[in-house]
Amino acid sequence: MDFKGPIHHTVLQQMGILDAVKPASITNGDRLLVNAAGQKIDTVPGASADGEINIPPVDLARIPHGRTTQSSEHILSNSISMLTETGSGMEVTFARTAPTTFNFVIGAHGVHSNVRELVFVSESNYIRYLGHYYVLTSLDVGDADVIYNEPGRMASVGGSKA
Image (cartoon, rainbow, N blue to C red; front, side, top):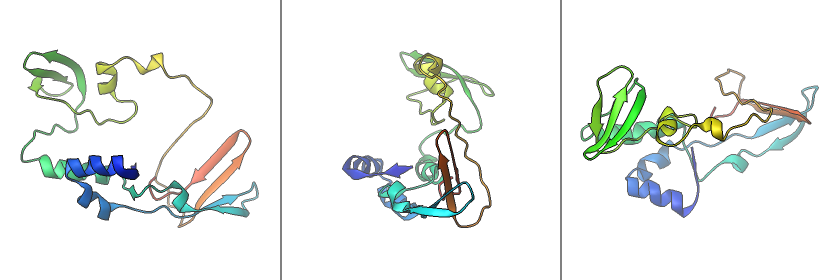
């Protein structure tokens, strides 16, 4: 997660986590741009992709989670299958536990969140395939981040945030 500028800093400050997020920040390394033969043709500076604060999502999630476990109920390793707004809050039906009513619900599942689909509309109304694939996985490829790009295809291996 990259945070830049006064708006992001204000949000982190108002959440009370700015001072905890800053030391967890990481920097991107330079990336090598290579040709089809694998020969270096240029360097893309890591700073070009950095925010002022860069923190892996899992580390960012740990900060507010750790600060709210005494005052909030956290339900992990479950899935929300239905949300119903009532006069007393939000009734949540889970896949593996009994329904519960909450004052508010935070669904932090990412881009293809089932919570987003339950609250708004199906993403299939808005998404169309553009011929691109994007995959993140952990690979032990050494220290160098490498990019290969040609018309119609691109591959990037490495990356401290991946």
